[in-house]
Image (cartoon, rainbow, N blue to C red; front, side):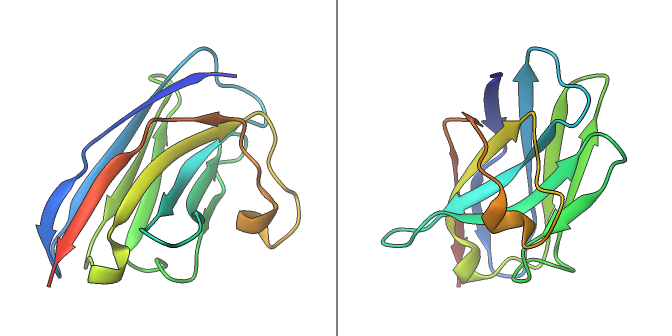
Length: 127
């Protein structure tokens, strides 16, 4: 497992943008994947996006496709989530996640069970 530290949450108006970042300590290699989940009050945690280091494939929840972009920096062991056109329904605690394995078949988000988690960062979207 690796240690994950998120940053970048905050308050933004609907339609605005935020960028989340996650730094991993430890070595990220091979089939490692890093990504983001979120959990809103009273709701279950849900998959948002993931990046597979090997090959650089990116995966998104349907609810964020076209608005969120995940990117990674192998050299720095960081992954970022650029969130544009934010909606009130995007408001949640966002968690960075990582694991040495990632599903090979869809649905990727629901099949992925990361073992490393960050502490979470709050994203608040005002309407």
